[in-house]
Image (tube, rainbow, N blue to C red; front, side, top):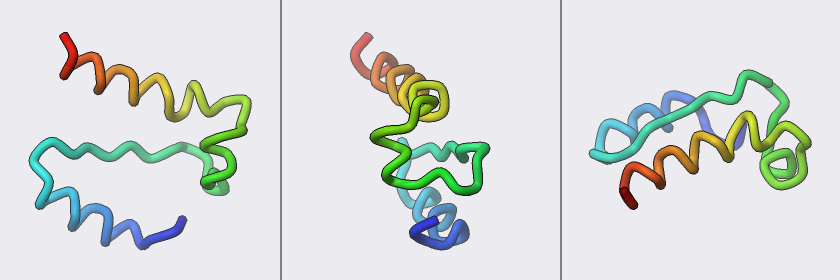
Length: 56
């Protein structure tokens, strides 16, 4: 993790449209975000759902 979880949760309180999603793999990092085989499952599908809410 790049930042403390508490910092993320505190920031989320101040951003009205923010949401958090914790990847269920402790070692998942920025490289995995781009290159992991399971990035679609862990990250991209959720991002697309959020984008669709604002586009539709």
